Length: 289
Image 1 (cartoon, rainbow, N blue to C red):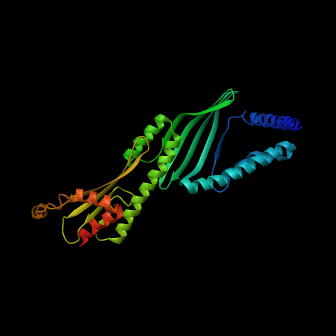
Image 2: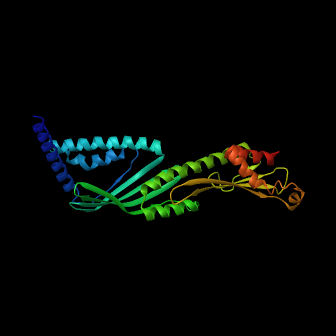
Image 3: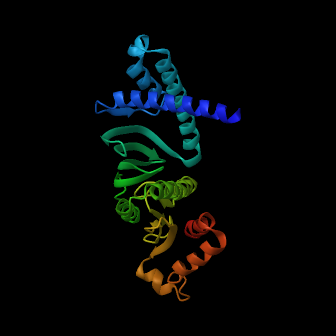
């Protein structure tokens, strides 16, 4: 009895799959490019536009399939919101175009536009699905990443490496961690500029790599915090904070204990003991006193 029921269910599933395949084949006859705005429920609106005017002519089975697709899209939108909260990556536009479709092979071109914190990106890639017996092999055969990261030399080099390796997952994983480190730097720089407005200046803004510390009492005496974020081709991220000194000759001549000369090394020791924020605060107070 159980075996008969399984046969019935398998027959019903197979019939439904054939019907869905027929509908998809009919739709895929025309080359399509669907642009979906992923915010504010626009995916659902796009589906209604495509299917709403034909709903009266549909049979019951087609209406059921359409209702099922609508439900799936709503679930995808909810999942997208959850994923955005978790990984910090916001997709604002998605474009998919089928360029080849056969019995065992399908090629689609994808374009994703979005941002992670203040870093905007556009990712274009070609996805190839090949059916080998019972296994579906999916590969990225082309990858192009466009983003305004020219001020981040290491990250630009990393992006070039990702394109060569066609490793989309590595790009998104590293983008989030790189963005977090940039946000740490921005928050720290802005905090000290607001706390010590007469001593601290940010020539390139709070998102740049440089913070200048000038003594209000000693003309020509200045320190510079240079905070870079290094990224390897494997996606390893390492913040690097250095202290640079600029003092008049007379001050250097009076520094018999070589305090200024040894300041960069002493700052590195502070970083290891106190961390970035406390170390920078110590340096600023020494100039503000």
